[in-house]
Length: 133
Ligand SMILES: Nc1ncnc2c1ncn2[C@@H]1O[C@H](COP(=O)(O)OP(=O)(O)OP(=O)(O)O)[C@@H](O)[C@H]1O
Image (cartoon, rainbow, N blue to C red; front, side, top):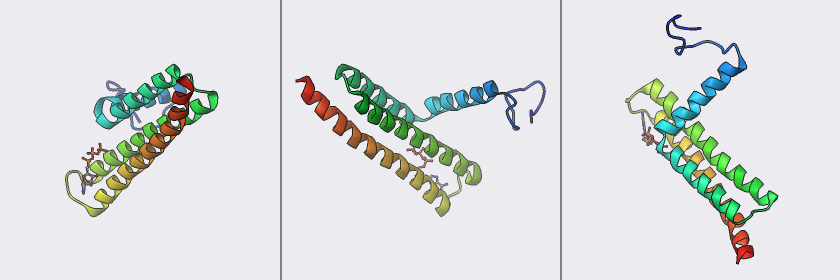
């Protein structure tokens, strides 16, 4: 449902067209980039890994693992941000043990994805570096 004909941005109902869904998804990515420092950091590290991959001339198989690792971290950051927003929406600034558990578990998910990315990065980059020298 649209809240008022003068403010089409305050929509609360279903999207009527694919392009409208795409617009909201794009808004979500912009919000991630603007408000989430950790998302920007992970995006920067991922970009550096891609540049290193281009320089080291990774194989197709190595690219697949690297891209999987980069996207897993970014998606984990996305889920973490969703959990933080929903928890804050529900409890505000009130302390709650379940709010702590939800946010800590979401952060743990990001850590797991980051550990996976470090392992993949090492397994892909070290042999590629060895080939280079
Ligand atoms: N309402 C709350 N009740 C209980 N503990 C909370 C609450 N809000 C935050 N915390 C605790 O503070 C930590 C940091 O929460 P916050 O919402 O500031 O996340 P953040 O610092 O933005 O996380 P990130 O580093 O992923 O960006 C949480 O992991 C949780 O342990």
